[in-house]
Length: 395
Ligand code: PMP
Image (cartoon, rainbow, N blue to C red; front, side, top):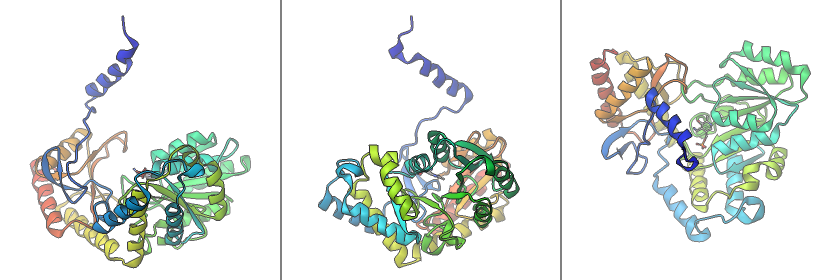
């Protein structure tokens, strides 16, 4: 007789994962997230992190973090609406609104719950959310939680978006168009000027998830909205503090009205403890560093262009990336995973990405270049790509 506490129904599902060949153990990092790391006991070049600017282990951020801990302790102690809202949270929001050049910015504990919490708070039953088919999972979850209707347009296809807008304009009072600013699997940039024009034509609101654009695109890494000069024309400009900024957290920048509403109705703020002082101190320092100098963003773009051109000249297909996200498209799923495995055996860690994360037949390894990589590390990685690529007849 089966015992419910044995979780046999889950054991069966786990076995299915094993049968499909997609069961995996989590890789274990034994050092800080740097361009060279010790992973599962092996020293490798790291081409897989979102630590775009090398801030995750930066001495200035660490110092700021320690100072915040000394003064405010290790935990915020409560949700923001009770007594978890410290002056450093408010100061950080001010710095964020200055950085994003918006009236206000509202802070969340992660990018994921920023999307889920904001989308749920600003849309409801009777509204419609129109979403790019490649948008991030946290947007999809936020849309589900909101109980609004949903419609999907083909990836970055403006005819498809206009069609969906035409079909729905008269059926709903509020329409929210959501797009990633930079798409995480291909590194292409959303056609934001066209999206904003369509939104204005059809009187829809716009929401940009700039997880991969903040700290990367625009002046001093201000993001995709700044890159296209669209300030004041995008209603909700969301970003993460876990990727280029190197720490943890998320925010949405926009109007004061948005701020007031979220502080009353965003569920992660009402029901989940505020970001810890260590994170807040480090994030504030990172934003100040970005606004002081373009040293880090310049280095990031220099490294990304260098690495991409080297891989391209070897004959690898780096797709349509316009940003430091550099996919090397292999196609076949099994071959992609074998390529990733062999690169690791040869000292380069770059994750293989296959269906269902990307479409069938478009498997790729996704290289994430950072400002912290040296040219020597990038050259070594390219050498390994060449050796393994030739060995597997990919070149
Ligand atoms: N949006 C996008 C496009 C992302 O890539 C991610 C991170 N994978 C998130 C949101 C969530 O951000 P976080 O990791 O800060 O929760």
